[in-house]
Image 1 (spheres, rainbow, N blue to C red):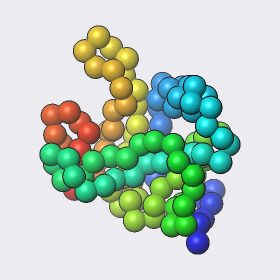
Image 2: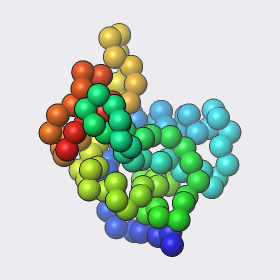
Image 3: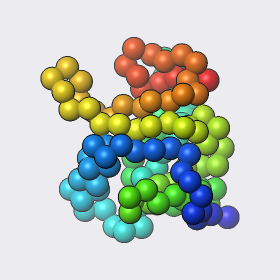
Image 4: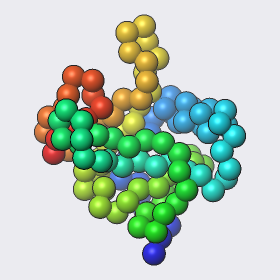
Length: 116
């Protein structure tokens, strides 16, 4: 059963990341039932990779509302993502989403995978 919660989200999204996410959703003309999916999956050079993309809500998801954007996350992923901040950098040497995860005990050089 899916669950919508008014509890505090286990993650935060910076203002610059939120601007980019809303722009992507608008540019891709995604329907209103699509929200941001945040999660983890096995793989990557450090053990887990981050999942970040737009999707519809699924049966085992918890839903959070951040700045008007629905965020979907499987309950089991909260353990790995609690306290994580998603940021956006737009510099000369680095452009893209950055995951600042306090649960990561090791990360890879690209910052897209971690171990916990």
